[in-house]
Amino acid sequence: MEAFTYRNVELYCESVSLSTIAAAVGTPTYVYSRGAILSSFQAFDRALAPVPHVISYAMKANMNLSVLATLAKVGAGVDVLSGGELFRALTAGIDPRKIVFAGVGKQEHEMREALKTGILMFNVESPAEMRLLDRTAQSLGMKAPVALRVNPDVDPQTHPYISTGLKSSKFGIPITQAFAEYKAAASMSGIDVVGIHMHIGSQLVKTSPFADALSRIVPLIESLRANGFEIRYLDVGGGLGIRYQDERPPSHAAYAEALLPTVKKLGVTLVIEPGRAIVGNAGLLLTRVLYRKVAEAKRFVVVDAAMNDLIRPSLYDAYHEIKPVKEQKQAAVELVDVVGPVCESGDFLAKDRELPSVEEGDLLAVMSAGAYGFAMASNYNARPRAAEVLVDGEKFSVVRRRESYDDMIAGEPLP
Image (cartoon, rainbow, N blue to C red):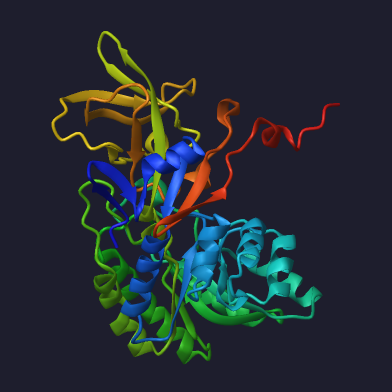
């Protein structure tokens, strides 16, 4: 669904104007569309219907409890990366049998928590992790269900910071070593090998890297089965991109078409871990113009959102479309940097951006901010983190109140 549209020159989320939200909640505020979140999840579910599948939402993209609960109600699982994410997922009502635990640095106490919870499987990243998981499971009198994360050495053709499938990556076990590590796992009494996992990167806008990676994984699965391994799950990770500017990512159906023939041939249950593709375009960051500033070589629009609220432009040089909340079709266009109050030259939301002329007090919407927005926010410069709002039709709810100064110092007793 199209979550954000202009109605009579006013930008709306579903059937609620963003001006109404700003007046009630203040700025900066993250605004999410419940309908858009569900629409994307259900599009994945329909596209994968021909095969057994589990959609384990990559909750690192957006871990708000209400977002998780929205997905839990329609049968989503989650991909977790820490004990804290596991706790949040269970609190939100996610079925533990649909939880996958990934990440290169799992700790023993996190393994224990996940084993006691009864998760679907651990995606194991290294031989050392496998040995610790084996000891931990044995100490509990349990077997840990495991898929080894195999690194297929495929170029995902995306930003280097979010490429994870190359042989130079910290993630996974090189495909050349995978068979030996599966044999080692089979000798461990605390390990139950149930599947194989891969994840090659994020914000992929072509299906060819997925197909390339699968073509390298399939012979390994066939070899493992020939040697007595019961590979029941194929976890292909996530990574499907969204539109930020002029990208044309594959549709949910096109993505599924790249996977389904292989999955059908293998007779496995498919596990996917979409994050950005579910929530990215379902959210925006609402901010207010504080000042206009004209320097010798630049024009600046200073807003109340900053790099601590949305770090992606500073970290990845990422593009986010910026729209005025009051549509200005006839306004003069000017070239500006949109910057925040943080004391860093890297504090910007847009550089050299053509925008309709805006004035102090105007509202701006930073689009496609539903993924890796609030989730990566910080208190840098002692700035309270933003509020979060979930819109459902004509209603909206504050699903995280704005942080207060007292909240920021609550864990810091004076000596």
